[in-house]
Image 1 (cartoon, rainbow, N blue to C red):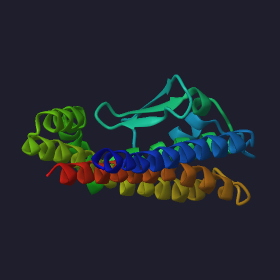
Image 2: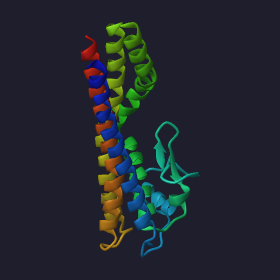
Image 3: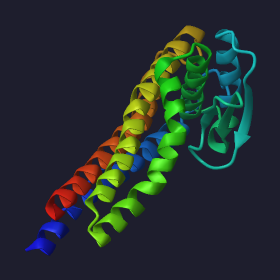
Image 4: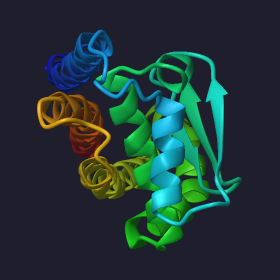
Length: 228
């Protein structure tokens, strides 16, 4: 009976994995669709980023290419905007939208956006928690030390907290990106809906990740209570 109950909790993990996989597939398909659509002004991702940063009065951020697809990110510690190969030199609607989104993070940094600061403060703690959570839970269950299991669950909760804090950071960056793109006139009115779809698909991956982690946390709590 116990093993049946234990095994049934894997359904939560499977649901989370399917949701995350679907979100990843969706963002890739959306990006690929609008990556084939050139912007009317033929502005490359790096040039759009430079234009946006200058328009926001940000002059201390470097723009660098990075290998891979959808590896774009803003590094607030080193003030570097890294754009993937698929974004840096591309003049597609998808590339410019992604570049603008990362610029949104640079603007957040320049304006001391609260959630961005909170997320940065959580990084060291979350790194420790994410590495320690599963070993603590495994050892605790193996040795029947429920205090250790609960400590592991607490550590895993920090991961979920980090992902929840990430949501407003990402949604705000996309909102800023669209406002900037409209204000700078980078996109035509016909191109804006495509940019919105790219940014929404990308944002949903963070929602899916948070839901997946919440389901896994719920599973760990169920296992813990069963052992108690």
